[in-house]
Each structure stands twice: as structure tokens, then as C-alpha cells.
Image (cartoon, rainbow, N blue to C red):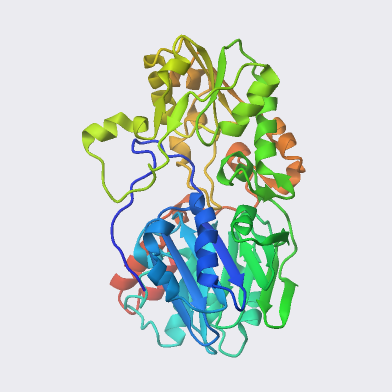
Amino acid sequence: MARGDGTLTHEFLGDDRAPQDACGVFGVWAPGEDVAKLTYFGLYALQHRGQESAGIAVSDGNHIVVYKDMGLVSQVFTEASLESLKGHVAIGHTRYSTTGSSCWDNAQPTFRSTATGHLALAHNGNLTNTPELANRVAELEVQRGELPLGTPKPTRATSDTELMTALIAAHPDESMEVAAMRELPTLQGAYSLVFMDETTLYAARDPQGIRPLVLGRLERGWVVASETAALDIVGASYVREIEPGELVAIDEHGLRAHCFAKPEPKGCLFEFVYLARPDTTISDRSVQVTRMEIGRRLAREYPVDADLVIPVPESGRYAAIGYAQESGIPFAEGLVKNAYVGRTFIQPSQTIRQLGIRLKLNPLREVIADQRLVVVDDSIVRGNTQRALVRMLREAGAREVHVRISSPPVQWPCFYGIDFATRAELIANGLSVEEICRSIGADSLGYVSLDELIEATGLPKDSLCRACFDGVYPVPIPEPEILGKHLLEGIEKRLSTSTSAGAADALERP
């Protein structure tokens, strides 16, 4: 295994983060193919879903090898490392942390021994019953003598993924398939999983299907991925989505599908707005087409007299095109994005930090000078990025700046795998649209309405998770004191410092 250390900074080097998804997952079963390189390129297509760490697990039928490290896919893997990963089944992962710190121990795939072999697992999403699962894992380890009361855990991982891996691996008298069917119904929240033993690829999706997961066909095998764009890059044809509440197993005997829970579809609405690649298809609906339709509806809801429509690249591009088409206002590229500003181990100096958004975006003065602009973006989180952007456009000579947002106001945090700010930090939670407009310094501000956004997807309202917009959570949310990214670190610390008489009790207190 490779190992790295360091602390990652946020993509925006100021204090306003773009919403980030938890992870991207990829799996392939293909005898005779170079599955490590297929997985590498699949992860490349999913890099937008997580930039903190990357990893691949490969099996040759007898042994599983896991290679993972901190950084981007291109930073973690080399030609030599991929050549060392030989086999016919593989899974891969790109991570953005929502449970557990951003560190090597929490990089995925996770790995565990089982009674019959080994298990590697990768996860996209976020569980909501993590403390309950942590209690179960601790009890199992105590029973097996792996964790004497009052001692630290043998693994330093503190993610909900590690808990899932431990639970599925803890069935000595059952196959992996049977163990998964027993454990998956005990998980609550959002999870799209790919996992494997020495011979078989598995994929599973929570009963609500909150995070995406699709199945593809190779000439000599099968592929599972977070998005259809990852199927395209490896030459796999799209077959279907993994259904909510479904477990799929793929081995030399073919593909087997099992329903482990009643499906109650609640796909993430924000995937259409921002998270998914525009060249991805979700529920048979093109993300690019959907975003253009959102822009058209936004133009009808919030028209304005202006000279140019410009996108905030890349998240606002297709909504801006739709806005321009509907309004008749010319579309133009008024901002240039530095494609190489992503996540870095290097902390910026104070001077660079004050430049903020200019590290990522720079205005084309010849395009925007003396123009009345409609600026289209996907969302406003804290408002700091838009405030800096409006100021930058005015300094470049824009006469008016009208901001249009292709989602409703984000007023509620996500507990299913998107790393939004806390509710207290969300600007739309405390201010009206007019107050936000004044706060960011725009001449006008308009958000697409929730009803129009849903209509643009072509999907029924009841089949979508809209919690970040309307506060209606499809999976019950626990009390605030047992939520949070670093919850398991707190449990781990209490366990390692407890006396043997009090260790179990410490786990019970969230």
C-alpha cells in the first residue's frame, strides 16, 4: 500500500466552500481485461466527486491487493503501480470526507479479513445511524477478543465505511452475499456501495437510492459506477441503474440481483443542479439537458434587461445557455477558470488567501466592460464567493451585475453525503432574497423556484430528495449531538481512554 500525509485545503481558498459530494465509486468484473487501468480511468471520470484521496483494490482470484493514498487519481497512481495490480475484479474510490477526517487511514477502499477470505469496500454517501453501528462493531470486536475493553481499536479509521466493512465481514458461517443481505437493511441513510471478495464483485444501493449507482456491460464483463460518464470512458454500455434496495453480485456464474429492502426512491435533486457531470444520465434524463431547461425556466421566472449572459464556470454553464436561449440575451464567456486550481497540500499565504476567488476565476475585461451582465451560478452557500465575484466584475468594468441561481435557496444542511455548511452558516437560512442581494452587492438576484426545478428534471416530486431546499428529510435524522463529520473520532477517543469497566458505557453516550 502507498501512504501519504498532509492536510488538504478547500477548493475555494477563501472561507466559502462550494457544495461537495462525498465520493465516487467504480467496480469492474472482467476476466482477461486490465481491470486496474479500467478502474483508474473510471475514477478519472469521477474525480469531480472527490479529490481528497483515491484507491483501487484488485483481486486475481486468490489475493486482494489495495493501493490508496491522499491526493488526486493522477497523483496517487503511476504506470508502475497500476502494472502491479493484476486480476479480474477491481473496485475504486475517490473521496471527499463527510464522516471521518481527511487522512490516509480513512482513504478507501477499506479492507477486512473474513472467515472465508477478505473484503474490500468503497462507499458513496453518508449514514445516519453511525453511533448505533459503532456500538455493534465494538461489541463484536470485544466478543471475538479483538478489542479488550479499555484498549484502542486496532484500526485508526473513523469512517462509516469502516463500520459497514466490519459488519459485513463479521459473519463466520455465511457467505459474503448472505452476510451483505443481513447487514444492508440495518444501515440507515445514503449509501451506494461497491465491494468485493477474491472472486466476486458486489454493488448495493440504499432503499431510497439517494446517491446514484449504475450498471454497465463490457464485451467480456460488467462495470458499476457512480455515473454513466464513467461507463463511457471505459467503453461500457449502459444497462440500467442499480435499483434502490438492491444488491447485485457478479462472478463467473453471471449476475444475480437481490432485493434486500422495499424501494422508496428519493434520488438527490442536487445531483441535477451541480454534483453530476453534465455528460451523465440520471433516471434516463440527461443532466446537461436538465440544466439547460432549468436555465430556461429561470429566465421566465426572473427576466431582466441586460446585454450578456455569462456563466460561472463550470457549474453555471448549461443553465446560462438555457437562460440566454429563453431570454434572447447573447451568451458570452466572461470568466476564465484555471482548470488546475483544485485541492492542494500547500497552505496559501495570507496575501494569496486575500485574493480568494481570483485564484480560480479571472474576468475577461474586454468582454464585460460597460456591459449589463446576467451571471448564472448553481447555488449560494455562505455568499462569500458571490460577493467576491460581483466585486471583481464591477472592478473589471461591468455596469450592472444581475445574479441568477439555478437552484432554490439552500436553507438546510445535507446529512446524506453532500458537505454543505452548517445551517447557521447558510446565508439563505437567515436572510431574505432581497437581503442576500444587498449582501453580495448585486443589482438583482433570482433563484429558480423548487417547483420549476423539479419540473425541469421530468421526475415526480415524491421521488426526489429535496431536503437541502425544503427541510423534508426522507430518512430520519438523529439528534444534533450525534451528528457531525468527526463523530467517530470522539467515540474512538473515549474508547481508548476509558477504563475497562466504563468502555462500553462510553460507547453508548453519543
